[in-house]
Image 1: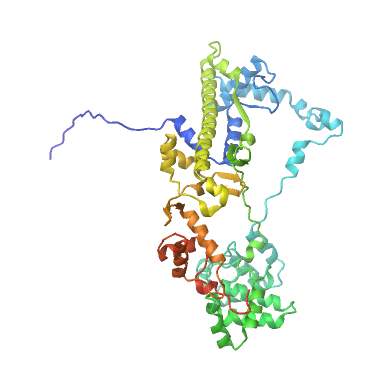
Image 2: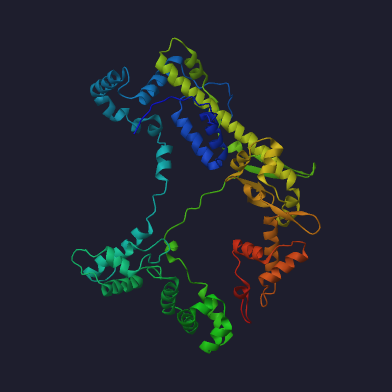
Length: 511
């Protein structure tokens, strides 16, 4: 075997993104709320970035001398460099000596916040009030169920097993594992002999004691039966609840498939009783656990506002950038970065912050410019949508917009990602305007979103006693000039969360 060592030269080209380009792409993709949070983080971490107060002159500088600025920069640099930096240890020792020397002054009640002029005048501290007004973290579903379980009148061993079972209840309030799995994972509960019989007995106690009814059910069918059992005890419509229990207990599959005549024949009850029972079933919950825990829905803040100008007969777009603070680079820190009298390390630290602040401001301005250009193309292309509705949405590929603006298609994708537009037709996701489409028999372009809207319109207007099949829906679309296959109709119907014809059918006496 022979080993050789050799050297070779190779010429190649590589494309690498500069940090400034990466930051620009990140800023472009951020929606309004995320951008606000990003700016707040930069204001806290970057000493060279300033926020211009509303109603003040941008050139006006907050009163602070050069010496104060230099001291602040030194302090921020030392926090970044750390204790091992030159001079860092001496500063920490000096701080410790100062604290021990003036401890009495620091601890004196007259030097505390309680003796501030606003406190002496009887005014409340607004920051403390704001913190006191922040709602506490809500209890999780498991914590609330455990609190209820502690008040249940059960034996001690049942109480211990119940705590194990409650840990397997999911956010919907249903049991997220079968009893065999719970037994395998909890065989060593102190003082309790775990068996399937013990688990079944404890689960029945959980379903009896915990609220809302349906908590701890193993599936939706059992969840409905538990709620019906609790409702029968306090409701006047006991006979109707009995019918509802019969439908769910003995004819659940037929009920899900809307085979009501078969249920009426097998159960020997009238269609009127079936419809009355189904009306009561609307009170049942498929996820009772959600009644105990609030789902936090993040607010949607539009990045773009579109208004109609009647005089010019056109739609005008504007960015909702009034929610963003006005930023600038501190002139003191910019001068400090060029001042040779400042030590090198401080000058480099300040220089990095000045460059980062400049890049951030440029990225935000570029985001505004790119987003507004893309929106103006949308307004010009989708005028019929704003005039007449979603059925007139035209296909608009991102590649076409990128070619028209002279930018990369990835830039268009980032510009519209997670962005919302406030229009005279409501709040609309900006990405909705970008899709492929088809041409109608009349030669008119129509986007797939417009096809879906037309399909929804046809289904809404159909005779519910004789709903249209997927083949019939394709025929109705063809009458309107939209020629698509039946399987495409099925796909769009499923995307719209519309059930098939047999489940859409309403029998006599139904609603």
